[in-house]
Length: 235
Image 1 (cartoon, rainbow, N blue to C red):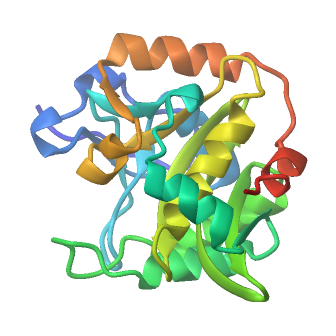
Image 2: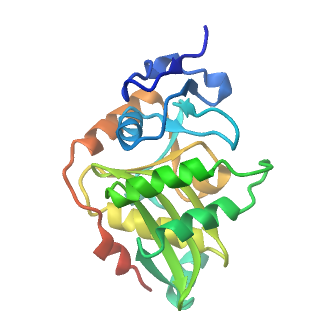
């Protein structure tokens, strides 16, 4: 089956996600653009862009999908201790661009480079200005030491990437996010692909019907980004 190529005349011309090539991490289509309407249409269908510099835009819809129910975040005793004693604090959207750049600069096992290209950075900054993309940041005084970013639609957070410059900083960011989202109805965190790290924190693989059910329930909610709850995360 040939891989569909998206045009530029419509933003919602994605093929059915059931057509994704699961042997290739759920590759669904190539082409199109990263305009806000297309990104919203994509994520609302469980599709996300993933490509490297110099490559065409590629769109993925993997199944099973790594999903975290906020109340199921798993914090170890050592992470509880880190939260109490580290002196680190959590903020949101204070340094969105710096968070993306830090994620892009973080080496990943098995990846020779980054998929957070200049084009992707510009696209998510546009989404941030529109209020659809957010960062959760961990600070040591005035130094950014960890965090994550992604899209927030309905009550669902579609995670893109995270980083740590000190031990457990990204875990604290994800814990703060989970704790804040747990205050919202039908909230969930899309973690995209399985990693042992995410599994250790409570994320689980969900087959497409389960993922779609949770995504649709979350997208139906009309809630605000819980910035104040995030900033209240403390020991």
